Length: 208
Ligand SMILES: [Zn+2]
Image 1 (cartoon, rainbow, N blue to C red):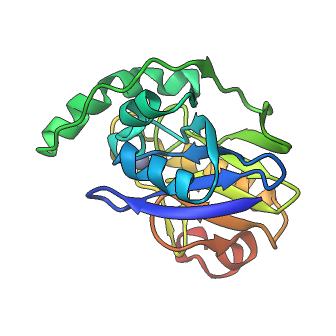
Image 2: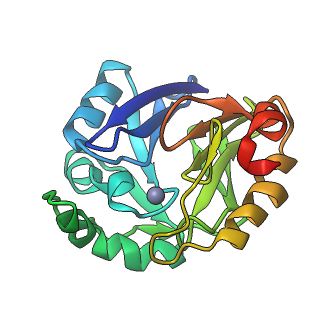
């Protein structure tokens, strides 16, 4: 699997382009800002965007979705519990003094255990709520990669003080879902550098 990391927008959210080497088809995970830049990065890499996959619908993870959906045929996929926040994301941005177009309607909904196919890539959906309602992570077993949004960071965990946040639920998502993945799994979080499941299990101060 090809992986491109694009930090975008005022909160430097990691948008990940994951591409199938065989077909050139790709998904943008969390197109957080600047849909045109994300589209251009995909073009430059020879990738055709077929999907936008949202870990959750905070505005800094969805801000580029409207522009990207105008520029490409990419389908927008989100967990149903995140749909209300998706519809409100541009209002949430306004509280931060930021202007965003309203996000498009989802094309389909994600469910725990579901597999999303991008070219020949099989991407598994894991429910990981707690930071935000309907938060999911995307796992590609073959390359041992997990895209976990704002659940677990290198040396940190997601905040739970925003609407719909739930600390015990976040800790359950970390312990019962992410930390059950093989230690070698690379974690690609929504902000900051990538890490591994093993390193976070051993060194993350919030998991002691
Ligand atoms: Zn968030």
